[in-house]
Length: 251
Image (cartoon, rainbow, N blue to C red):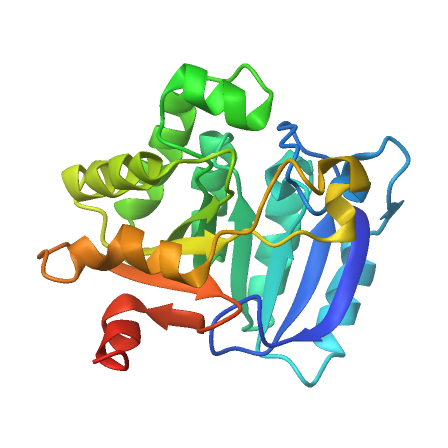
């Protein structure tokens, strides 16, 4: 597997769990606000055998889980083998994905406990093309969400990173309406964009961090809605918190 980096211990990547984070290289999207662009370079990372990766997981006694992120992990030809072998170690397995490879996701289901899908915008072809700089078929992402949502043994998180100057409030409302329509039963996370060096100096002014109050304004109307899923905010103010908990502290 082509790996661009490994974090031995993280408490931020999987809520309420200590995990090892494995960053795979390569992605089929070209989002300008991506903070891991170094993973997309042609010569990024190095090859690890499944045996060596499994040894690293097995010998890490500080963790209870493994988070596979990237890049786009489903592009790795041996991702299914790795997850299958890792599952034998009785670790909680999580994978981040852009959702564009539903056939791979379906094969991973038996070995995965959690899947986090980065939903870049409402699933409209031109809107997605604008956000990702890639001409894609959004129905493939819809298929991925449907596959996971039908499997009650997998924790499903759908998250959208709110980038000022790129997304608008109505984008989030359309996403929530879509998730409600398909009776999504996982967790939706509205994530605050924050600039990092990985984004690139040339994009520092183009993309801006939304204020905490803006994220609250977007989601306040859903406090009284009877939705089949929970809504969270992830930002520098509240960390990772459910909206009812956030607003209850404001009263």
